[in-house]
Length: 346
Image (cartoon, rainbow, N blue to C red; front, side):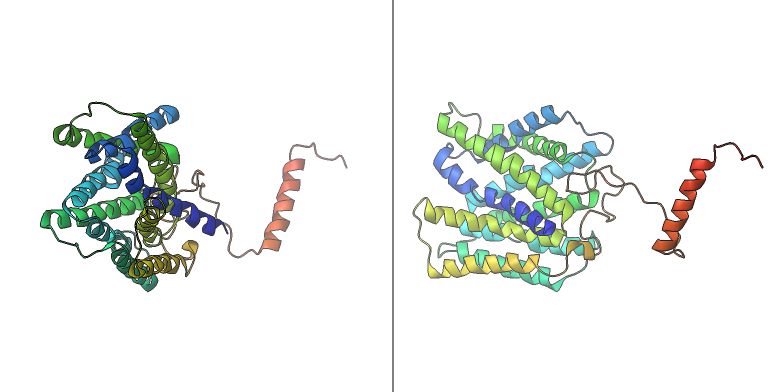
């Protein structure tokens, strides 16, 4: 039951990311993708950092910078390059290589069990995304194709390193670090390529607030929590829900049409996500969850469940059963109570 709730909460992150297209087209200023990325990450990251008052220390200065660039900064930049140079369906399909890359890196880097179920689900989900979003205008631009693949690889490597390194602070502080680094990384490209807008309206502010609070803080807290507590290959397939939610919102809110082939693609995505979440639980797999795993075990917080890592338990004598241990424990307790009493007079 706890694992099911954790998967459902993690799935909310890509579902919230799926609202980005609708919010961007309906509320944000046109042709300002890097501004949207900076506003999505940096302001809320700074507010969260001011509230938590946790700064990185030691190796976590460069580790948090690497994770922030991979998970947020570089990913956003490559995503927008791909989106501007390719039709939306092609860009979404190239980004959907993320779960396949994570599945491979999880085996090679994290030494997770190589599950055929995970690789099959990643391939099926990629096919479902292609059916859902590819259209007859699916042209290929070399720069856009490279950017799309690198964007998926960036987040894949970010997931794997997040899993491997764990986290040294509570989850909100860990998320704040990455939002700040990712937003700061994009300031230079934004100023050079787009500049600052002449004016912002209330609708622009509402769009930025949605992307920053729900699409930024809430989504990434849920995502990092799931990444740290679930097998990397399993949690990465939940990313297929983002294009699915985007397509459904386009149909429900914007009046876009969905063909029968796209409906089949949506069903295939749901089946792929369900397939990846089945099978053995994370605790039964070597290197599956961060709890008790060897990823990030040197840190004070090494998993995504909001509790500090437990201290190592005392080693028990394997020759004694539970009954014998309880008897010895009661005798030791009586001995401690009477140790300080004066000897009886004969």
